[in-house]
Image (cartoon, rainbow, N blue to C red; front, side):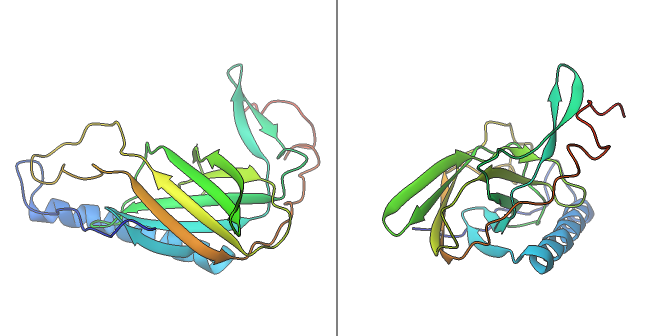
Length: 198
């Protein structure tokens, strides 16, 4: 069951004047534009839950850069991976991306749990999000369950800082996936397996 939505406070305080809160909303508006672009590209499904606005997207499995021994190295998705799952989380009041979250995602086919995976933060050229590659047996339909634990980071502001206090759970039901893999950039974007030199 999806956690009931709640709108966190956005009030003038000793930390933020009304015009400063508008700056936060403007930041959130820009993130909303990025979410819309993701929706147009990949078909995002968006829900409100707890203090969050949460988007779920399924794309093809893909490689990424990983820091190894102090250098960036291109890593292809695991050979068996055929989906890339993404969760984007925004504050329900100001719309800004929420960093530093511990997110767990579970995929079920009917009543059978296929897998549970953590969703680490992933840098992206236009949309910060959490994500992971995985393998599914086909197109589905699947039920996707998401759990967001209360973050450990401290919150400024005696009025507005009281947010993200409870765990949040979401259910994205009847999701059809399109399994596949993004084309390999010929071992790496530079055509070899050498670390990225910057």
